[in-house]
Image (cartoon, rainbow, N blue to C red; front, side, top):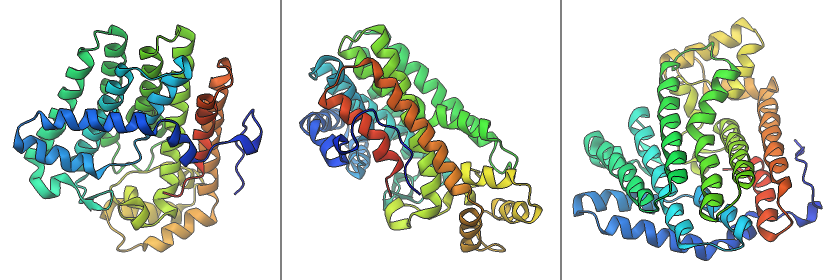
Length: 339
């Protein structure tokens, strides 16, 4: 399916992911050092698990957004931006730890999850430690704006998890309900990363609001593409089993669209997987073929592209720069990614 993203600048001026991350490569190294310093100051039983989580890594998309937003506003990155980049990655790691415990996940990014290696008791406390360490670091910035954003974000993320748990096994979840969960659990953090990048760069209220809107739309697009990749990618790329959400009793956008089609047999198949929490009476390949043939995957991807376009439009108040171009390119990077 050809991308329908609208980008104000010429197509050939869009940056590749490698070019985007190159703009903040040194900054991200400093963020990593800050994260590592916080872990090193902890006791050995804490630091051993925390370091395992840190080394599990990821692309560091969230701190990269914060750093790019900060450079977009001021042209530079302050020590506060580096510290807040570490804070956001620490908070993100904490959410993954708690998610894995709740979902009883056994794999995270191709490795044994922390709860498998150390058990739920120790792992949930490590997640708590990461949360509180991140907030302690934030408090040292002496910024009510930062604290307001982080506390609002944390509350929304916890509420999102609770709402999602209340809907597990519910085959009648609506698109609106799913998007509410997406905004709370995923997009809110993207929004706050972009907003905090502007705050530490002394951005104006308009700049902060624009970047908060940008991050929210990018975050929604990011999760909706995750919904698609859960069905079309591979376990090696995802770092978890394919079609894992439905096995956990969760309906994501492609399946929500499928259920809206009203075919009784399709609903029976999906509800069987959700009830059994396994592909027993219905094979995984049957489900994958179903959503591919009915066009619901393409419809979900189109919705992700709509939010990606909203993100692009949010940056209209900023003058041209390499950092603006990078942020304009991020939505394409997200909707076209394969893992």
